[in-house]
Amino acid sequence: MKWHPDKNPDNEEAKANFQKISEAYAVLSTNAQQTGTKLLALDGDDTSDSRTKMAPNLQSDEYYAILGCPRNADENALKKAYRKLAVKWHPDKNPDNEEAKANFQKISEAYAVLSDPKKRQMYDQYGKEGADMAEQGGAGGFPGGFHGHGGFPGGGFSHGGMRPGEAEAFFASIFGGAGGDPFGFGGGGRGGFSNISFGGPGGFGGMPGGGMHHHSGGFGGMPQQRQQQRRPKAKTWSLIPDGTEVTIQNLVNKASLNGDRGVIQDYNDSNGRYVVKLEDSEQTISLKPANILQHAKCRIQGLEQSPEFNNADGRIIGWSAQNERYNVYIPSKNRVVSLRPTNVILKDNTVAKVVGLVSKPELNNKFGTIKAWNRDTNKYDVQLSMQQIIRVKVENMCIC
Image 1 (cartoon, helix red, strand yellow):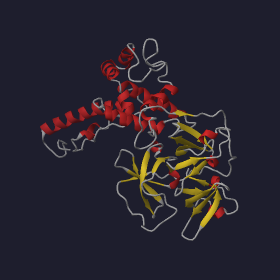
Image 2 (cartoon, one colour; image 1 turned 60 degrees about the vertical axis):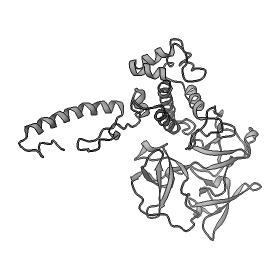
Image 3 (spheres, helix red, strand yellow; image 1 turned 135 degrees about the vertical axis):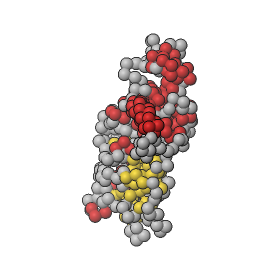
């Protein structure tokens, strides 16, 4: 704007400078589209580092662009970017999602190279072929090497990039185990965790499931920078508490945010939406209840084929609408298990939705606070209001 001819009439120097600036921006913006770098508009006055802030670009083949980091990013920045993306696209959080599996492999391959100083130096100088050459002397950063990475003859990844098992093992080696929670906001220690896969739709078996339906609806997703209305101070049993960690789901207009995580900051009575602060960001977004999945704590019960998991505490990290099962991470076992709702007992004070009631259909889709679980009847006592407490089967309460 400073040198725009309209602001500087009859000024040849201004015209020449404006042409120069425009030419430079045209070149840089073309390169930015290829690498995922965000540039300010021509009239931007900000001269801070935000000018080179990058967004992850999973369509790119360039490792820095994939992670959304500049080439001068330090190890902490790379690790933070990798963890955020890896948790978003992890197969255990995205069951039956081939796109998530492919993205997770791509992200892990990028970080596997950039987190190793020798490979990163060779990659910076010579690209992927340079990183492959660095492999010839050994496996580098991942303990024991990868099949097709450190251990693959000639170096480099196997055809098609890092394999699914390699990607999950790599993630677990960094964030799993040692009492840590790889899917938690605080990160995890080193060690390993593994996923329990199930041979067919029967899964674990155990108590027969029924009455549980996945309800998606509402597309929410309108970004906002400030809260319009504070939650009333009076106790409300139908509202998810502030500070609850959630994953965004089922957005249509803002589908790129699906899988991102955040923390509930407030509830807006005027539009029936939660204000969620996105992880590692100052941005907040206004979401309908159907567009969030709580990271709810739970206890496992009623498993017949795998009784060693009964009474273990866990945390819900995903929901498969196709199989109508929760994906639950169990810290004490370092396992992710896929379970029917009847085998997942939500902890007291969890806010959940009533679903599938036949005798009192007018209560369906109402939210309430779970006050207690009765083991003998396998039912919850749920408080809907100051005056109303109902008793319903476990499968008639859901957080999905």
